[in-house]
Image (cartoon, rainbow, N blue to C red):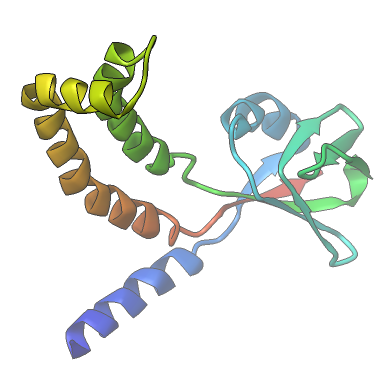
Length: 165
């Protein structure tokens, strides 16, 4: 137990010791902006020390437009942006669990499309048991693994880009 705590502390401290990658505005606009698709929870730091959080952003030639959850936009001038932190992981494992469950229930829903009552659902489950039971077992067996991967991936520190003029 003692070594597990030491190892986890060491792993978390390694990621936080990394320096920000220095990049020009044009390099950020051309090279990094494509990688931001689908990323959320972006932190933007200005030269006056303020932190701005955005769900997504748009990079213009003279400004950075930040959008929150309600798609309300705030604009920061290019000269005031100092650092941008982007989450490293955009993979969510929760949709995989949902998709596995939906695949399990798809056959039952297909057979019960027209008349769905208790008798037809029971017949559908019995008729599709050779298919739905293994798929359901797969979903039950892989859900804890996917949730553990989701938790581990959320521990990765954000990638920092320092904007140089």
